[in-house]
Image 1 (tube, rainbow, N blue to C red):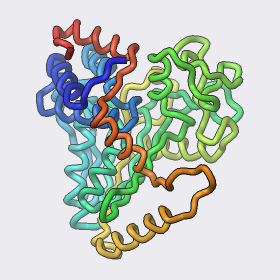
Image 2 (spheres, rainbow, N blue to C red; image 1 turned 30 degrees about the vertical axis):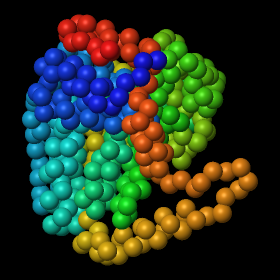
Image 3 (cartoon, one colour; image 1 turned 45 degrees about the horizontal axis):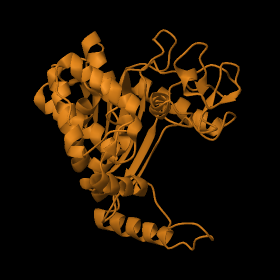
Length: 350
């Protein structure tokens, strides 16, 4: 696998997006987001998305340079239409509108409809934490991406519908970000591109039998992802179902719906910012979050266990390592990026 520095991959991504007609500032936002996902170990949301996004731009599924349209606004709410613009760009535009509202009122909620894929939700929790804010965020696949079967089912009915919570501490934030399926679809796609099997417990085939073959999500007869917790996990499926309802219903977008094509393109989203300063106070919040995280880290460990880790630690640890060692890009992913670069007449790094 070719290995490149974060700076090299970011520069390549920017060149590719700009060559595809994306304004330079927007290309920078998306490129930084994708490479940061790789740095954090979430390759499913990293540069493997470049060919996909650019293909959507060429087909007109995504639009370059479109504005964020506010469809409803109150002192504490912004409901916005992304006009199928690049998701990371529109998500930050929404957060930029919510931040002053949360600072003034304590809570601000926003929604996005018709928005491109917004990427790794944990990134937005980290953004909020830098402002000493807490964040709740969730997305669905805007009607598409129905790859998660209900318990006992053999066909996908909802998308992977990730959820994210983030809370600041006086040092590193605690960020919980996970899909409500056993694995994100992008992680299966990454295994498919690497031509490697998936771990046990991620997938079922079209008959409802467990499989490790990632191709079942992309070839007929199609299989499905199972909810987190297992194929009979009503808690995982129920959480995913409610997030689908909230994201589609509140945004004015769509819930999972057979009228939409199966492959997912973009998201409907819900973001809620909380300002501790107008609740129990920022000082109190940080004191309590520092105290609890320290208490959890001090837990005695079982024989053979490593240090206690909290949500967000694996990403920070992986980022520190990859900033030094570089980011390895699977051969299958690099082939797709190389093909895209050749079509756009962009030179690849050595």
